[in-house]
Length: 204
Length: 429
Image (cartoon, rainbow over all chains, first blue to last red; front, side, top):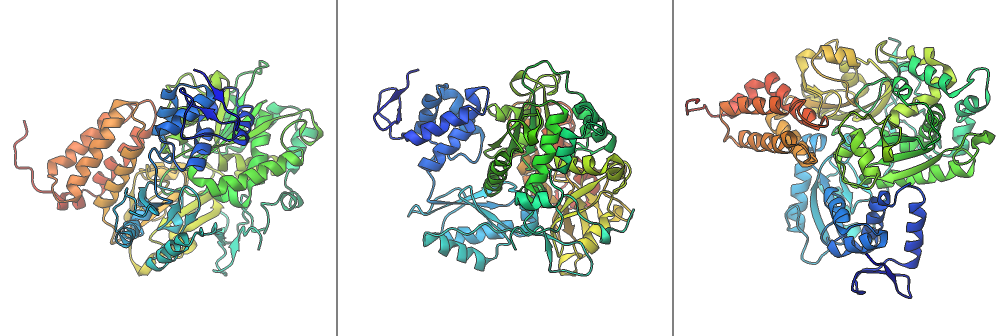
């Protein structure tokens, strides 16, 4: 397999044309990543992440870029991309809403939240709104069981304790180009005398 | 057991700003690592650290409950080649949301624990595997790791000693199976998370064929305390057979769900009624799943006097797991809940072993039939038959984790399943 570089440092596919390229800075970052592991193959996941954060997905053409950049077989990169659910193998909407409906969320209204979003957006889970703004997905346990129901926004921030009102707010916020902030949920104190204080607050 | 209401948390103490290195150090942080590296009288060699941790009996907090120090002692003698510590922050068992609290509120405690473990086992590189969904927490860890490097607490010549170790954060990308220790190693190597056949065990052949130990985040976070205060101190906390602090994650139909740090061996009913402040909307308790979705369900009648420790839970017919307790009230549809659990395992089966790949799918399909009223009573026995074809017949424990909830939920709530089923009209044979 050959790897060519153009003037802007981009890695190109076999015939020299590709819709996707890594920047010089990214290629340098990949070189740093490689130093952290004894074998190049180990950076497959981190570089797929880098690619997805850059292009919004890792469709077969992006997988090819990753394979050529790392000089790994395309079949390997494809196999890895397909195995992990967080990699988007096809382009998605601008915002991907992963609504958890697993055990604890299921018990606490996760399906209602998903249903509310389906009605509100006029799509079913797994679909994207016609304007390309939102993709709605049903997710397996996201590790926020005590804060159900909840969803994750585009593989990033968690929004907890969802109610229809809160879902509306989040959608408005996303539509206006803003993203919800990370929500720190301190551990409740076990003391029997106080209900409102909390342990572990980070900066307060 | 000592009075839980006066218990002082040690994993996540109520100190603001503990996620800042200066605050962590001001409260005794890194004293343990300093002692291990410089106090020759107490800690003459790495083996003395392994011995103390073994003595403390920190049972693995990721679910298997194996003595961490004993696991460390399986590492072969140093041969000059690389040796690895893989820290398991995959945290994907439904009902479990504890390790993220450590990343968020006390990241240096974990980093210090991992560094001590690395010293004890002559590890050359630490890899911390964190589930990809925890991106917000990975960012927090990146900051903490970078601060630790800047302060000379990771990297070359740590705290002025001749001990050096690197720590690399590695993000998963959405796969429950990567919490299985050998699958985690495959994923770290950049592959699909297919569990490996054991033996060889990771201590013999782990990451890149080299000796490797895998420990859970909470497990390693207990190490600095053991070094600072001794194994006896650790053993004085909570249940004798399963000592130490536990991060209990309580979710489901309680008034105050959340993660609570308390001694091991807490009475289940105290956790529900007092710690989590009782059932939501004044409903009655129906059942709990004590330690993540794979641990067998326990009906309310079996919970009186039951405590959260491995031995007591085994006696009751379940397991400690990750101490992520899912509480269900009287209105819970047990049949539907089991179907949802089975759907999860079907989705997460890696597909490597036929009994699991096919079995999890059939469990989900048949349960869906039962949930929608299309099932027959004979389907229940078919489900049980499938579980016995899955258990113990695969490379890893995912098949068991998928089979146990089906087996035990049906046997413990058979009436509710039969009530959903039509009679079997066609004769057997």
